[in-house]
Length: 359
Image 1 (tube, one colour):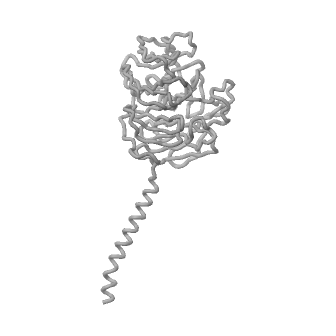
Image 2 (cartoon, rainbow, N blue to C red):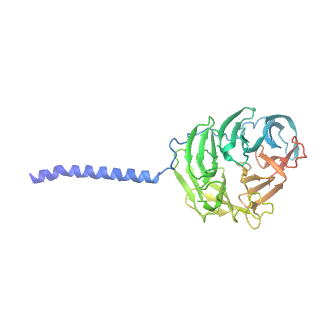
Image 3 (cartoon, rainbow, N blue to C red):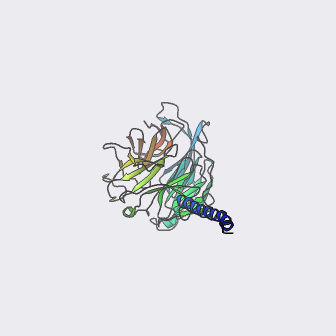
């Protein structure tokens, strides 16, 4: 009788052990895949173009910004070895433009911003517009200072003056929210998002860099140094490495004319928790960048930064930096290492386009 009772209890103990094990495993999986708070919906995948939409066209459509006016130009593709090219036609998209915020050469879409209201210093009054290569424009967001397009131009990362980062779609619908996050950049494969854990202009409370999966909000990598400003710039073409700028001296003022504020460029391997590697070498440092635009991917291993009235090309393989002063609206054209740009000299015709060799 006792033997029979013990025999019957054995399967029950095994079943109970299996249940407990299952609970423990589920808890462990939940902990390991912990997602970022505010990532309720997730970001569906989008179609990513591998080459510019107008690759086979003899002309390219280029947005440019001059004296508060946003233009959309049809420019003849430069021939090899040319130092300039011809603008065939030009149309005005908008007046009283605050800035051209981002351009996606793959899709032909771009973001620009205007200010509604009398306070030009208030981010709350900044309106973000999404335009395409055909001149169609839609209003997508109000109150975002820093904004960035996703690779497929289906989503926009926007940070308000309180440091709240929102991922919205092109209809203006909110997909996800992050607190104290700014300078967000998307990976080329559309699967990752990197950002600085800080409120805008509050370098002192910077909490390092985070990289998350867009589909789930899962944290893939973090780098938390000593509280300095480490601003994400762009991902590598394979989306496995993040390039970021490290501000080595406290920002004394934005656009410091004496270039006392200097930054270096580093690379961070997303998987494996590797220590960031310094890319720029020696005295080849970049001036402090406020609201910089990054054009990438482009020619192999080339990272292009534009801020104020200059453009810098960083070769991430060897750390070399090439400077193009008095240059704005820099955009990659075709493949390789060719840039199309304007002179920042406002006495120069907006119809004059320079062709730059990045290497």
